[in-house]
Picture (cartoon, rainbow, N blue to C red):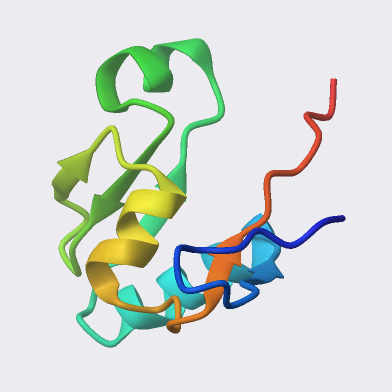
Length: 89
């Protein structure tokens, strides 16, 4: 795995997608929200690849990406980046 550099020539530390997902889940839990990963084609059609529900199990966000949520929630520290993992196929 290689590290990327930003414009300041500072090496970025890669974290796995699973680690980023765990951080997102913990941050959402503090807000009584839950991240769901769509499993079937029907769920993907309605909600996208992942979606968020509140404590009452009402969908509050759909078509979310782990990368986008991690950025929005601020769970990725400066100097960290999410590693692009090979697809399991």
